[in-house]
Length: 385
Ligand SMILES: Cc1ncc(COP(=O)(O)O)c(C=O)c1O
Image (cartoon, rainbow, N blue to C red; front, side, top):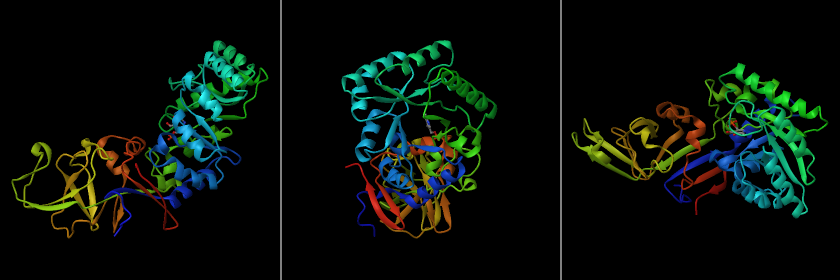
């Protein structure tokens, strides 16, 4: 009995498999290439801090986040690491970023000037990476004369250190032609800047699928996100690259009832029993991880057997048909992961919702506690309170 549980529904994370994935990424990329571990949105909701203890042990020194609050939280835990905010930071937050030695992404001269002024006032040098829009049409300098002029002026600012330059692939998995064009646009722009005598310590464009498929785009830094967690968002299975999934979602049975043929289950009386049915209630729902759109599509594992979810998924509960399965209140149910001979993968679940694995996992609610295991031992618990 897991009497340490704070809630009868939880996520288990196997840090050994995460370690395996970081080692695999290191072995795939060009030797000497730095890895910037992308841990935005709390490492896609899997826990930036506990995971990064492992990746730091394996020599990772650079981390990428999306917002200042993510960066501050990370720096508080790991003051000696380099953290880059990969997205837009409004100028009123620059002071906090500079005071805490957080690296910013900049793509306008105006923002660079503001940052320079704030760094000057604080008697500090602000570190930044320039973003380049090579075809994603999202953020970044658009290569051309005007941008080149602005970059030149940024390099001349006194209280700024331009440490790096980066861009982002739009379709490195699905469109090799466009990816190549993006790379050429990006590197041509870098060459124009370097021809003026300016240098970058780090140049980076490669995301997960570029890491898996394109050695020619490594430059001297890569930014893997989702593959660290054992998913590929691609046709190919993670195992083909030596990657291992490392999370399971589990729950304990909350209630069991025998529902007669013809009676209904759940909201809107959505499910009508076509036989006498053993209905098992699980204490997690769409506010935790399983959107309502998955109603009556997913299965769960009870006592090693696949059981179909029935009725509309509720906010905090869902019901399953466990007819013929031997079980009792408190038994462990697997919603993602392995039980006996059976396994349910997030890939299978995404197949029903039309979602991708990245999007599915980043919707996990923090109220679903996470238990981290290493070498078979529980080493960390992350919960909302
Ligand atoms: C700027 C940037 N770099 C890297 C990544 C990592 O992408 P992936 O998870 O596909 O590796 C992302 C994710 O969206 C990103 O926005």
